Length: 460
DNA sequence: AAAAAAG
Image (cartoon, rainbow, N blue to C red):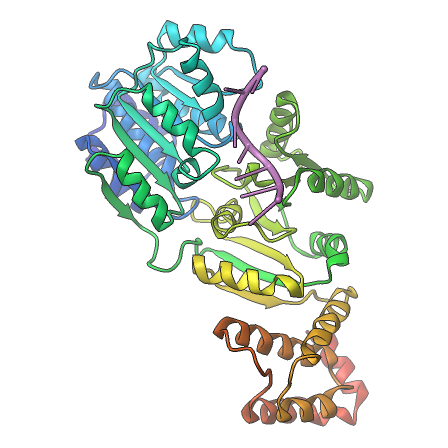
C-alpha cells in the first residue's frame, strides 16, 4: 500500500512525500481511513511505529480540505507536546497549517493571542489547557477533533480529573481519538464512556506490547552496585545516544553529577528543572551534543530521538506500562535497539511481573571481562539461593563444580531461581539430572586443568 | 509510592 491511496489534499500529500514517507505503517494503514470516516477511535501500536502521523495526517487533511476548522492534541509532557507540534508542522507546512503548543512554565500572553488569531492545531499539556479554559481565555478554540496521545496515561489517575474537566469545555459533537502503545483493559473500558461508538484497532500482538526489534537484557546486581554497573555498561556497550531512566528526580541529579565527574557526556532531565533548562537539555540531546540523558519518566513516553541505541533502567519502573514506553525510546522506525535493566535479587519478582504482564522477552546477562560486578552480584544472589532448599542433584553439582567455574554455576542457579519464580512454585530450587549430566560432561573435565579453564573464560 | 501537569 502507498500513501497516495489515501487521497490526501495535494499539499498534505506533498508534506508526506518531502518527509520521505513511502509506505504507511500498519497502524497508519488501519487508522487513517477510520479517522477520515469521522469515527471515534482507540488505536494501539508498538512504540516507534508512527502513531503521530497516523492521527496527524488525516486530521490535517481535513483541515486542508476545510472539513474541519480546528483540532486539539493533548500529551502528558511538555517535551512531547513540542515534538508532536513540530512533526505536525513539518508534515502540514505546505498546506499552511497553523500549529501552536500550549503548556506551563512559559508566559500566557503569546498562547492566548495566537489562539485568538486563529490557529488550527493546538498541542497542549493538560494543566495549562485547563487553566486557560477556566479563565475563559480560549472559548474560541472549539476543536472538532480531539486526540489523547499516550491515552492510557491521560486517562489514568493523576490526569483523569483534568481531562474530564477539559472535555466539559469541548463540544459533544467532536471526533475523539485515543492512541498509545499500551492500553490496559480498565482504561479501555473507561474510554468507552468518553468516546461515541468507537472503533478499536490494535496492531500489537496478543501478548506482546514491547516492540520486538528491541533486545532486552537484565543484570543482577547488589543495591550498592548500580553506579558501578552503569559505568561498566557505558564503557563496554557500543552506544551512540542512550537514556538512563531513574525513578526519582534527585536520583537523576545525583547520577548525572556522578557521570559528569567521571568525564561522561551526560545531562539530566526531570520536571523540577526550569522550563528553559528542559528545552536546552532536550535540544542538545536531539542534536547529539549530549550523548547520555539521565531522566525520570518525564522522558518515558513518546519522545522520538534519532540514534538512541540503548535504554538503561537504572531502577525498574513503578509500573509495567512504563517499562514498555521507556524501552520504546530505542528501536524506532524499523531500527533495532538495546534495553538493559538493572535489578537486585529483591526485585526479581517485580521484574517477572512486568515481563509477564507486558509480554516482554528478557534474558539474564552478565558483564563481560569480570568487572567484579558479576562475581559479587551473582555470589550475593547465590547466598539468597543457598538459604533456600536445594535439591540433591544441585547440591552434588555445587560441591563438585564449586571451585571450577563459579560464575557459570551461579548463573545456572540464578536461572533456576528465576524459572521457579515464573512458575510461581518456588519451594525447592535445583537442577534436574539432565542438566547435571550435561554440565559435568562439558565442564567437569576442566577440574584437573586450571589452564584450560582460564583459557575458556577468556574466550567468552 | 514516583512523576507528570498550573502557579
